[in-house]
Structures are given as structure tokens and as C-alpha cells.
Length: 165
Image (cartoon, rainbow, N blue to C red; front, top):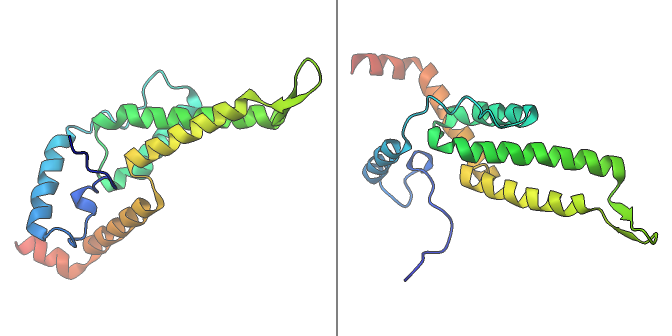
């Protein structure tokens, strides 16, 4: 079996038409929209999150809402991302209190076990960010799309054309 290796595909709404023409992107965008499902529950954080994780969840949803890419299927991934951030905060608190090195029963210094936990959480967070499209490149593209949408919404000529069509 052949597996295609490389970067994951960007959503059609983020593409600019270099590798696919506008008609192909429109078809792909419509197909992606159909697969997304509803978005009515994504704003509410799951009950099993602690208060800090809920705050992170709400922050992520608020910041990603403008992209129009979130749906109810993303709730679990957003919850995992928020939990990672909450636990990373807890790890930082522990390491700030205890230090990176601890001493065993013989007085020998060794790495605090929380350092390994923190490293695992960072890797999990990085993976979640990748799946959610939270890289700096993705953010730049989303920012550009949001700026274009704002320009179009405020452009009096475009508003007049939309009203007449």
C-alpha cells in the first residue's frame, strides 16, 4: 500500500488557487463544508475540564471562530489542546516551586520527573496545534483572509454590487 507523505492539505477556503483553479477550489470548499457538520456546540467547553482548561478552550474557540473552520467534531481536539495548556501551566508552577533538579535519598541531583511530563505535554500540544492549523503560517493565512473579508464588508462599491445581484 502506498502512503502519500508530506504536508497535510490545507482547507480549500485557505488556498489561493495556485495548485488548483477557482472552480476546483469551490467544489472542494463545498465538500468540506458538508463534512464539517454543525457548529452549535463547539462554543461550550466540555464539563470535565478544569477551570483553567475551560478558559483556554474558550480562548481557542474565540480566536479561531473568525476562520469558520471549527465545528462540533473539533470539540474533543480543542478540549485536549486546552487540557494540555492547563497541565503545562501546572507543570511550570511545580518546576518554579521545586526547581528542575531534585535530590534522591543519597543526595545525588537528578532531573525532576515533572520535566519529562512537561516535555510530553509540549509534544501533545504541538500535535494538537498542527491538527487545528495553529501554526504561524496558518495564522498568517487566516489573518489575511479575515482582513480581506473585512475590507470586502466595508467596501461601499462591493456592498452596492452585492445588493444589486
